Amino acid sequence: LVEAQRLDREAVLAYLPLLADTTREAQMAEHRLLALLDFPGSSEQTEATILEQVQDGSNLLGLKALTAFYLKTGRLEEALAYTYRIDTLEGLDGQALVRFMRSCLERRQYSLAVDMGEKFFRNYRKSPVTTEAFFVYAKALTRAGQYRKARTVYEDLVNSVPRIQDQGEGLYLIGMLYLDYLAEYDSARIYFDSVISHYKRGVGYIKSNMARPYCDLRSGDFEQARKGFSRLAGMKLNSDLAEEVDFRLAVIDFCQGRFDSAEVGLQRLMINYPDGYFVNDALQLLTARDRIGSNQELLKAYAKVVEYETRRMQDSLKAALIFITEDPAGKALADLALFHLINIANEEGDTAAVLKLVDRMESGFADSYYFPYGLKIKGDIFYPDPERVEECKEIYRRLLEEYPNYPFISEVRKKLRELEADAIG
Image (tube, rainbow, N blue to C red; front, top):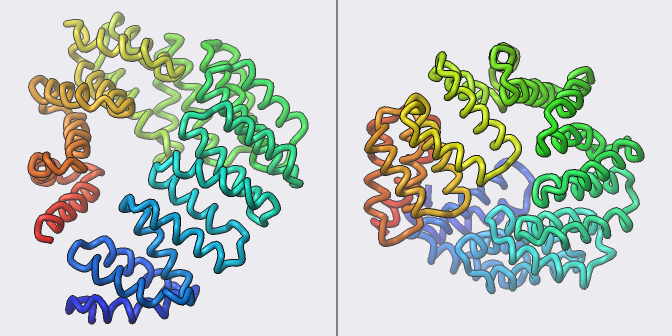
C-alpha cells in the first residue's frame, strides 16, 4: 500500500524485516526491493534507506540486494566492497565471493568474475564451497576466452576434490573445451573416453557419452557420428537426450543427401516431442525443404549450409549463405539465409553488418516470417544507446502493432515500458 502511494522509505522499512525469513514472502520482498532500486523515480530514496538500515550489518539480505543492484548498474567498486563486507559477516568462508562470481557470469562481467576467482583461490583453498568455486572460476575463464587457463583450473579440480563425480565432470568439461572452443577433436575424444571408461558415476559420465559422437560430427566423419548417435538411441535416455539424438541423426541424413530419410526423421521428432527443444530447428529444416521443392541445386547448397552450421565452420557457413542470397536460383531461401547472416553478425558483435542486413531484408523480404526477428535484433542493438532511444521505441512500437503474436512480444513490451519510464523519470 505504501509503495503504491510512492512512499518509498516506508515501503523499504516494511520489506527489509521480511528478508530474514526463507518464505515466499521473503522472496517477494527481495524482488520488490530490487524493483524499487531499479525504478528511476524511487531508486535514490530506496538506496539511501537500505544503506541507513544495514550499517550495523544486521541485515545480510539487504546488503546482498544492494550488491546485486551495484553490480547490475556498473558500480563495481561498491559491489566489491559490499561483497567483502558480506563475506566478513558470514565468517570469511568465501561463499559471498562465489555468489559474486555467479552474478558476474549472469551479467556477462567475465573479467570481473575471473578477478574474483583469483582472489578466492589466494585466500580460501579450504572453504566449504571450494569445489563450486573451481567450476565457476573455470567457467568464467572460458567465457573470457582464457581456454588454456580454464583447462589448468579443471585439472587442479580433478586433482584436488574428493568426489569422483566432480572429478569426472571436470574431465568432461576439459573435453568440452577442446570440442567447443579449441576445435581439437582428437584431444576431446581422449577426455570423453577417459570419463566413459573410469568415471561411471555422476553427470560427467552421461554427458561424455552424449558428447563423444560430436567429435566425429564436427570433424566431418558423418558415418562414425551416425554409429555413435545410433548407439545412444539404443540406450535408456530421458526425453530431452532422446530428442537430441533423433535430431542429430536426421541432420546427418540431411547433410549426406538422404533428404527423404531426414524428412521422415524430422517429422517423427515433431510428433514424438511436440514441446521439445529441437522442434523449432526441425520445423525450420522442413520448411526450407518444402520451399526448395524440386530444385536439386538449391537443395544441395542448403545441405552445405546445414553441414557447415553443424560443424561450426563459420567462414564456410557465411560464404554458403551469401551464395544463396546472391544466386537468382536461391530466391526461395534468400530471406532465411539473410536471417542466418543477421544472427551470425549479431553473435560476432558486428552491429554495422546487422543493421545493413536487416535493412536489406526489409527492402526485399518485408513479408518474410523471419523479418520481425531481424527487426527485433535491430531494436535490441539500439536499446542501450542513449542517442538512439527514439529509434528503438519506434521499432518496438512497430513490433507490438504489426506482429503481436510473435513469441518475443512480451520482452519487447517490457523493454518499451522501461524506456518510457526512464523518459518520465
